[in-house]
Image (cartoon, rainbow, N blue to C red; front, side, top):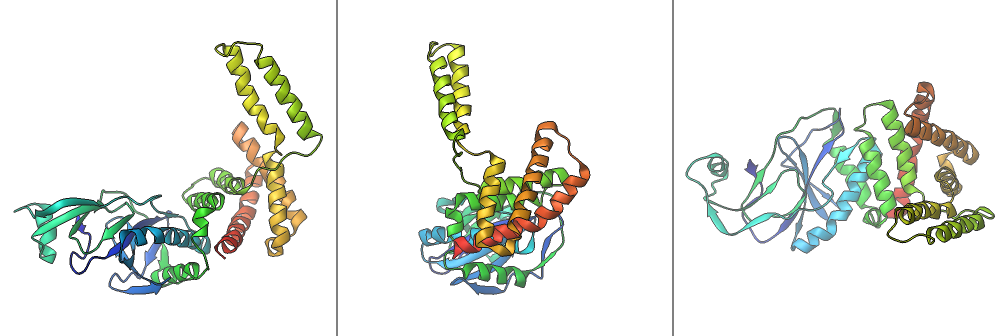
Length: 338
C-alpha cells in the first residue's frame, strides 16, 4: 500500500501505466523527482515494489488522457523493438475506484501509516499498482500492490525517455494501435523475450510473421476447383437433416474447405514478405529471404505437428529470425506511424 496521487491542487488527470521487462532486464538510473518533456506532455517515473510505472500528463479532462493512451502504448512497443526486450503492460485502462465522499483515515492500521507520511486525514479512492488508469491526481488516492517475483539487467532511464520522444515524434504513432495486425505482431514479438527454450522462441518468431500476413486468394485453377469442392460438400450435406450428426459433420468440413480459396500460409508469407522487401531492399535479398522463410516454415510445421525438430536447424533459423523479425517490424512501424 502506498500514496497513489498528489492529492492537492486544481482538477487534473495523469495517465498511470505500470510495466515490467522480460527476464534479465531492469530500468536503471531512475530519478522519480525528474520530469521529461516528450510529445507535448510531462513524463515521469514511479517505482512501486514490483512494477515500474510511467506517469504522463497533465490533462485537463479524463477524456483527453484516454485519447493519449494509444500514443504511449505505441511508444512502448517502439522501445521493445529498439532495445530488443519484452515490455509487458496492461492491455486496457481500468477505472479508478472513487468514493462518493471523502473517507476518514482509520485511527490505526496500514492506511493510517501510509496517510501519515503526507498528512492526509481523509482518502477519496484507490487503484491497483498493476493496472493502467487515468488518475485524478488532485484527489487523495491509495495505491494497492500484490506481491510477485522480480528479475534484473540495465536500460538507462534517459535512453528510455529518448526512445519515447523518438516514437512520439512520428507524425501519427497512434496508427500502430489502429493497425491490429502490426500491433499483434509487435506484442507477440515483445512476449518472445519471456520464452525460455529455443523451440518456443523459434515458433514465437514465426508466429510474429504469420500475424502480419493478409489473406491472398489462390490462383487458377486452384481457385475454381475450391468452389467446385465447396459446392460438392454443400450438395452432400443437404442430403441430410440439419439436426443430424452427418449434416453437422459435413458443415464443419464445408467451413474448413472454405479456406481452400486462399493461398497456403507458407506461400502467403513468402508473397507478403517479398512485397515488403521490394519496397525496402535493406531488409535483404528478396529470393534469399523468401527461400529461407520457406525452409523455416517447414521446420515450424514439423515442430508443431510432430513435436520434434532438428536442433541445429532450429538454432540456425532462430539466428536468422532474431535479426530479420525486429528489422521488419521496425520498418512497418515507421511506415504506419508516418
